[in-house]
Length: 211
Ligand code: SAH
Image (cartoon, rainbow, N blue to C red):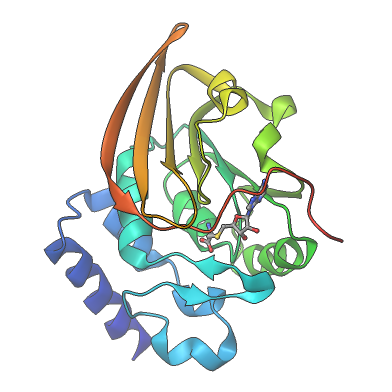
C-alpha cells in the first residue's frame, strides 16, 4: 500500500516539473511515513507540509524534490543541512552523496531524528544539536549546503564554508511573507545567485535551541 503511495507521489512530483531522475529516485527510496507523527501516517505521501514537534514542519515533498534537484548533489560529495527537523530531507540526501552533516537547534527533534537514521541504517548522516547559523566549521568545506529554514539574508558564514565551485540552496526572506528559493554558487571569492521561485519556510532562528 505504502509502496504504491510512494510511487504515486513521485509520479505527481514528475508531473509538477521535477525532472532529475536521481532526486526522484531518492524520494522513492525514502519512507516519509517514518518521519511524520503517527497520527498523520495516512497523509505521509500527500504532497503537503505536515506539522512535527516543537511547532516545526516537515516540508512539502515538492519543495524537498525541487531543493534536492537544485542542489545537484554528486555521489562523492559532502553536504551540510541546516534544520534537521524530522530528518526527512537529510535521509533523501543520504541516498545521493557520500556524507550528510545536519544541524538542528531543538534537542527533542535532534534526538528523534538520530533514532530514525539509526532505524533506517542511514549511517552516512552525522547529526548535531546546535545553532546552524554558525555552520559546521570542523567539517567544512562542503560541496553543497542546504538550509531548510528561511534566513532574512544569505548568511556569510555558510558561504564561507562552501568549497570552491560549491552550491548553497536556501529560502531567503521574511517569515510572514513568501520567501524566495535562492541558489548561490561560489567561484573563488565571488558568488553568483539565481532565484528559483517562491516558497514558505519556518524561520532560521539566530540563537541556540532550548534544551
Ligand atoms: N529539513 C526538515 C524541515 C525542517 S523545518 C525536514 O525534512 O523535516 C526547519 C527546521 O529548522 C526546524 O526544525 C527548526 O527548528 C530548525 N532551525 C531553525 N533555526 C535553526 C538554527 N539556527 N539552527 C539549526 N536549526 C534551526
